[in-house]
Image (cartoon, rainbow, N blue to C red):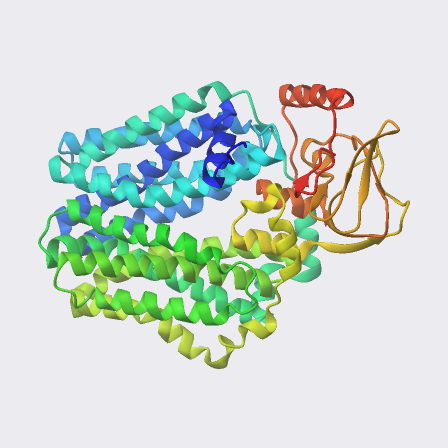
Length: 564
C-alpha cells in the first residue's frame, strides 16, 4: 500500500518541483528576514543615540515615505514585467542596506544614517505586491498557485519569529552595521535567485475608468464607511491595534535596555517571542473558519491582547516579558483574523478590494502614530504607564462603541455550506480564512436540468463552477472523458490561462452548482482583476492541452479540480 504524503510535505514538494516558484519563494525568505532584522537594528541604533524619543521619531520618519511609495510603484509595475520589477526590488534592497551599513561602519553623522534608512524602508515595499501579481505567470497548474500562497504565509510567519532572534544574536556579538550587511547579502542572494526570471511576467496598463464610474455611482469605500457603522467600527479597531504594534516596536527596545538592562540584542529576542505567539496562533485561527459568530472570539482576543500588553508595564523579569509577549502575539493574530473576516462579512462585496486598500493605508498611518506616541508617553508618564496606556487603547475604543461591537454578528453573514465546499477543492484549500470566505460570498447558485450543457468546448470562459449535488460528464471532441459529482470544480483553465474552453461539461442528472465570476476568481488567487500568461508559458500549456486527447481519464469520488 502506498504511503500517503502529509499535507505539509505535499505543499512543500508542489512548490519545490516548479523551479521558477522555488526561486521566488527562496528569495521571499531573504526579503522577510532582511525586513524584520533591519527594523530591529534601526530601532536599536536610534535608541543608543537618543533614547526612546529618537527611536520613535526615526521610525515615524521612515514610515511616512514608505507609506507613500506603493501607489507610485504600482503605476511603474504596470509598464514593466513583474520579473524585472521583482529583481529591481531586491537589488534596491541590497544596495540601500549596504549604504546604511557603510555609513554605520564609517561612524557617519547619525542624521546621514537616518536619511539613508529611508532607502531600505521604501525598497522593502516593492516585493509583496509584485510577487502577488507575478506567481500566476509562473505556476504550471492551479494547485501550484494554492501551494505557493500557503508557503508564502508560512515564510512570513516563521520569519517574524526567526529574523528578530537572529538580529539579537548578531547585535550581541557585533553591531547594527553587521545586521544591515547581512541583510544586504541576503537581498543580493534574493536578486540572484530571481535574475533568471526577469523576462517572465506580463506588462499591464491598468484603466481606472471602471473604478471611477463605480465611485461616482456608489460613492466608493469612504461613503460606505460613513453609512455603515459596523464597517467603520472594524476599521477603527484594526487601525487601533496598529497603533499598539507601532508603539510596541519602540517600547520593546526600551524594555530590553532601559527596564530589564539586557542590551540591544534582547530587543530581537523579545520581538521574536511576539512572532512566536503569532506562529502558535495559526492552529487557533484555523478554527475560526466557518464560525457563524465571530464577535465573541474578537472580544476575547482583544481582552487577552490588551491585558498582556498592560502586563508588560509591570513585569520585572525577562522570562515574564517573553511569556507575555508570546501571549500578546497569539491574541493579536487571532484578533486580526477575526476582525478582517468580520469586515469582509459586513462590507459590500463589490467594494471589498478598495475597503481593504483603505484599511492598509489606515494601518500604515496608525503604525506611524504608535511609533511617535510611545516616546511621548514614556517622557510624560514613564515606561510602565506607557505600556498600560497603549494597552488600554483597544478596550477604550471597544467600550465607546457600546452594543455595536457585540451586534456585529447579526449584520454579518457567513456562507458555511459554500466554505465547506470550497475547502474540498485543492485550488482554494490554501487560501487564508478571510479570502476563502470572501470567495464563498461571491458564489452564485445555479440549477441545471439533466442533459443541459454547462460549458461548451471552444467557448469563451467567464465563470468557474463547483458541483454541489448531482453528476456531470466531461466530453472532449465527442468522447466522454470522465463523470464526476459533488466536490469537483471545473472551468479554471480558461480563466487562468485565457484560452477557450477545452472540453464540454454536460449535466447527467439534475445538478446543483455554484458559479464564480471571472473577476472574483482571479482576484482571490492572484491579487489582481486580470491575468495573462507569458508567451512561453502559454505555448507550453497549449501543448499540454493538446495531449489531453491521449490521456486516460478515470472518474473518481475524490474532490478534485478538472482541467477545463
